Length: 287
Figure 1 (cartoon, rainbow, N blue to C red):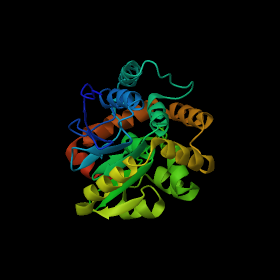
Figure 2 (figure 1 turned 60 degrees about the horizontal axis):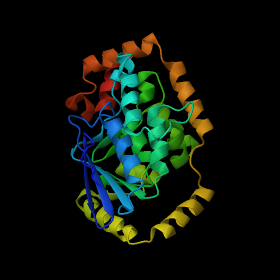
Figure 3 (figure 1 turned 120 degrees about the vertical axis):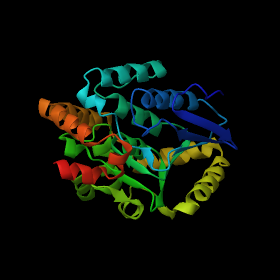
Figure 4 (figure 1 turned 90 degrees about the vertical axis):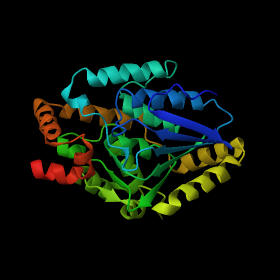
């Protein structure tokens, strides 16, 4: 199957494993380019019997995905345009009523028959971290990775599934700590809290994930399907009704004040490489 048409993604398939590399400089933003490409790839790969495992990684050593495009807040046309492009990338996959396109992408990823794995060796915040939380497994590089949902510092909430999936993974108290506090967590804390399966030495991450992916790829798809359905009977995904609540809460918080805050943060250096290296510190300084 040809996976060369998705801008910002490089896809290599070998031994039943599709390695998907996010390569959308300068920050792998979940914007009007990367969102449609990811959604189109997910639609395409779900019917590819040659792919049994999907590994998502980044070509950028510092950033897995910085976050969603701040233009979604400052430009009234940015999110509708990204949504239209993402809908066009998978026209036969309807978005459930009441869900936004980032939530829908997460739902579609979680429903894939293949096992999905995130390899984190850089910062993943906002919509980038929301995408990771939709995957079946996540592994993080010690000393190189960081995950956060900083939306509260913008005056909104993580509305792409982040509020719900953080709670699903780490529990109520820790979700409130991370989502309201907007803290960046390193690999060790992410492992302890349950955001990732394991924190691994950075030098070991590639080999570990590669070996695991190829081991899983040798398992018959029927076995994987039965295991996933049984596990999901005990630990089900988020309901569409809960996503609707999150989406409604997100839009209820949109205001002129939020737009002004986003513009002030952009002026201060948010969504630049220098600013994103210590985003939390930058936001604290201009709060």
